[in-house]
Amino acid sequence: MIYTVTFNPSLDYVITVDDFKLGLTNRVGSEALFPGGKGINVSMVLGNLGIESTALGFIAGFTGDEVNRRLEQIGVKSGFIRVDNGFTRINVKLKSIDGTEMNGGGPDISEKKVQQLMDTLDGLKEGDVLFLSGSIPASMSDDAYQRIMELLDGRGVRISVDATKDLLLNVLPYHPFLIKPNNHELGEIFGVELKSRESVVPYAKKLQEKGAQNVLVSMAGEGAVLVAADGSVYDAPAPKGTLVNGVGAGDSMVAGFMAGYMEKQDYRHAFYMGVAAGSASAFSEQLATKDEIEAVYKQVANS
Image 1: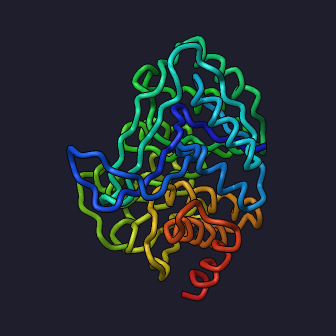
Image 2: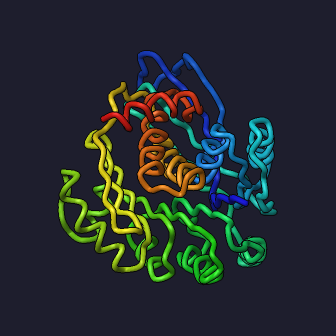
């Protein structure tokens, strides 16, 4: 089974406003609602590729009900735990003004609810896949990822972690199957500036030395690099296309990588799938479809 964890999901209200004027009433040109959160994005891209997953985390209130309803509509299984107080956050994304966003806070999550999630994760076994993505809410202990990794250590669960700095470094001793820093996050860890694909390789290897199995580094317009568990290194320039929406591109990349690896157990194919899925989502208004990913894959494989 495949599981994704989104501690603090959202209901994303995406709008455009023509000729926005501060301090005045503005009319919305277009509007749409989507379930949001990094783990949820991973589940949606996997679903687009025909791969079933269960989305885990916490929801609350009427907005939580709507997140669940919309996930069911698109065929993503929901294992979200209901929190009694507050409501799932609403994120307003104003696309017409340089990607301006206003993100809500979300409900407080008690230790009892956290333990309920841990009890669910305790049922994972060898061959299962788990995606841990995004930040940890202020109401939760910041060692949540570490606790999950410790719980599942040695069980043969393939775990992907997409987090920043200390959240990422603290899980490396538990040997995550995949981590995906971008070049800026990787540079921040080691106090360096990394601009070229060649420059990230030695620092990705340092994260392997600390415990990571596969290190996938996204670099926006510069492309991507994979330092794989078998010692091989792959890199690819950014596919050609028009950037439409960068939200969810990184989540699409880890989903594509894992989908590719599960399909062929081949790191080159997994890397190409990751790059293709991330780029295809960036070139699309919404998260990439299977056809869009396959079209970009051909370009990546022939580059």
